[in-house]
Length: 121
Image 1 (cartoon, rainbow, N blue to C red):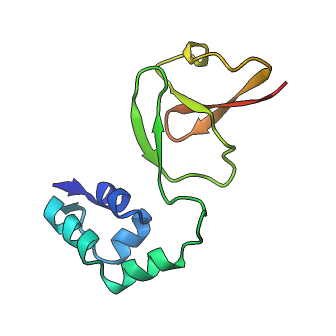
Image 2 (cartoon, rainbow, N blue to C red; image 1 turned 45 degrees about the vertical axis):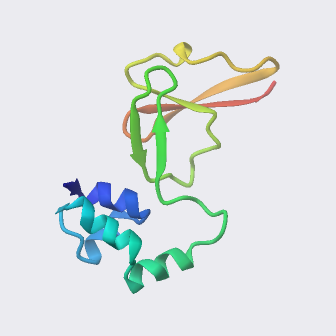
């Protein structure tokens, strides 16, 4: 069984859309697979309305130190992230920035991550 959130991630739709179109709070994996294989009109329309190269609905955040994974809806204010580090680690534990770059730490990426942004010095 999958949660509604897990189903929304798999279908690449917002959680609100999943709820609005009747995806229950708990759904069988084969039911989600059926929606992927034979999408209803609302899902086809949702996918068709997305601009090519636009912002994704969900982003997979993975800590570069321990591999902890979290799926989040990306925010408009998020810069281009080089990497993320979870709250179990200090950002200094991440791989060093490339020579000639300066690293900035961005708090508030997802629930428990710090984003790392490397830019030319």
